[in-house]
Length: 397
Image (tube, rainbow, N blue to C red; front, side):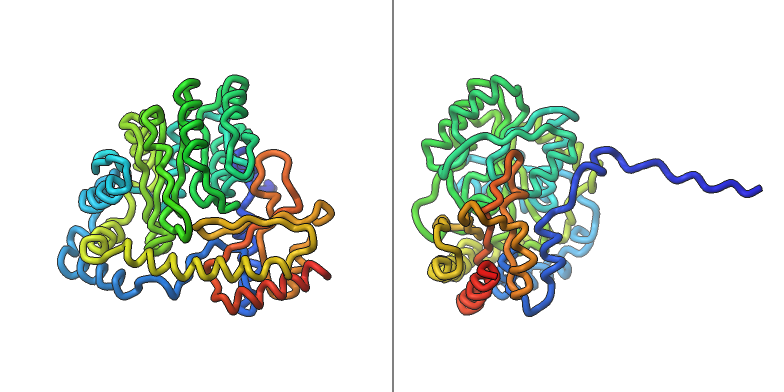
């Protein structure tokens, strides 16, 4: 008699309970070339410094091939860490190479922090709305996620203090500059207040800054990590994805020594180290090119695209809609009248060959179903105008 095979054990509970990224799902549905896609957070590929990056790779493969193609230390290549430390220090936060851990994109830094800091059931505080992939990371870690009430300037420090006392969280996660998804920036006094709460009540602050160099208006606001009261409890995350190229998958983590060492151990278990050739190429690029000048050129183009989207939104969105004017970054946040459900409307809008991301998935608590996120950097002003025309038709039905 042949026995029926026994099925394999089930997936881990955390894997069963964590969904995929709604943004990735939308990108898969809207991959047709005729779709004008405001959904993705994709840098404009025509603005990549292809020649500069190619020459950097060519140099390291020709001049130091044995090193470039070999295993490396978990913490990261010294040349890259030195360059990153110099850039960070020049922006007002004294940093040495030993303060940094190179990661495979700043997304990995989030995962490493979750591994180092969170046990299943621990509480994490987040902004509302919040970066989607951070919600994924914390859910996969088995954390309990609580949204901090706030306003157009970000999390409310008084509400944060009350939540810290009630919930006893491990950390607060924030994208304080040109936030994903809203594009908002926390003012300096709000940052100081958050740092003060963390110092008084014992809380880790995770400050994610992938967009901070993409400023089009206004003055730069210092990092939360630069506030003296937060120095021993703030982890600053950075990335080359928005200013050099996302395909390099290069990010970094700056944090206190004990936590940084724990993250390095977690990284050893994850991927041993970030690809050596990519790190050396980035270090070479920084040594022979002016990245700041390149970013300034990119920012000038992105600023024009932001303005093009702002110019067309009034005609595209229903009467009674409101939206913000971000000073930089990649995203704009809009709220339609309460009767609109942007998740339910999306299939109808996509039939007009345009796409956005509904706002509901960005909320850890009660979602605002009338909101949506638009990315303005990927398309030209002419394409943005046409995309908004299609969006208006789709929303009107």
